[in-house]
Length: 98
Image (cartoon, rainbow, N blue to C red; front, side):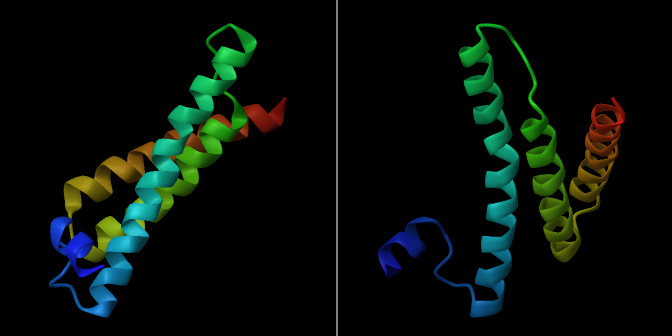
């Protein structure tokens, strides 16, 4: 296990830091999963579509990542996520108003 942590550059983290890095990584994985969902949905329908799950993964992953960006104090990272969250939320509002 130490070899894997060392390889990833995570071996020098204390437990609290490791939890935060894990939290941020989960946010990125949720955010990335939206592309897999969109790809599979488009392949299934044989047309380029953006399913509602894409927007939910965008929003949830964006919120988790925003919290992590705030924790590490990265203003550019926080700004990018905050703007994205507005867009994802607006798309969900438009979808559910139909």
